[in-house]
Length: 160
Image 1 (cartoon, rainbow, N blue to C red):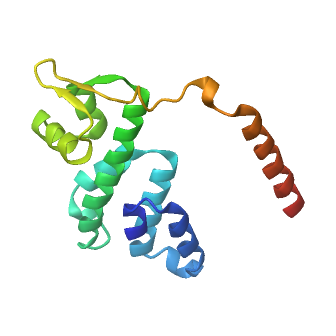
Image 2 (image 1 turned 180 degrees about the horizontal axis):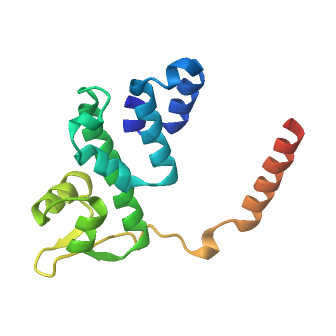
């Protein structure tokens, strides 16, 4: 679970390879595998719902500690996606996306994790400073990327 909380999915998968098949069905192992699957497909709602649900859904009470942290990881991923996709967002949309209960929690989240966001409490909107970060299409080295991808595909074909 710690690897999932830190969003170190590749390391998590390497550790899973070392676990015997018989152990993978144990609830304490199957639960993190389910959480990983939800992360991989981007089903963040399922993870957030599990973290909000009753502790009886967890294989062990100690998993609740990890669920609190994984919730923050998921919220951070959603926030970064929203920041990249939108110039601004209403408080109500942000509350729904981040699965927060009220504007105070949203303000606290923004102050704690995203000081660069401009929160307009009177207009109930968040303004992102993502315009400065967005690269223009012309700045992407398309030809070089295509050559690298073709090279990778050729090498992969040789290996297989």
